[in-house]
Image (cartoon, rainbow, N blue to C red; front, side, top):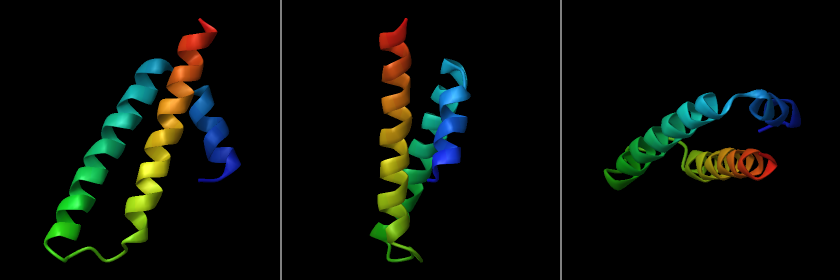
Length: 67
């Protein structure tokens, strides 16, 4: 994720961040399923999605503390 994408995440509302987190969790589930049945094309995508989830959770927490 580039710094411009992170800035865009910081501009999102709490509801939009929550939607983004749900989407990333679904993607992670699908990637794990593909990995389990040996159909995963890019195993590095698992790591990237986990990091994206952590970034979104961090931004959500920062917004909670700012309130």
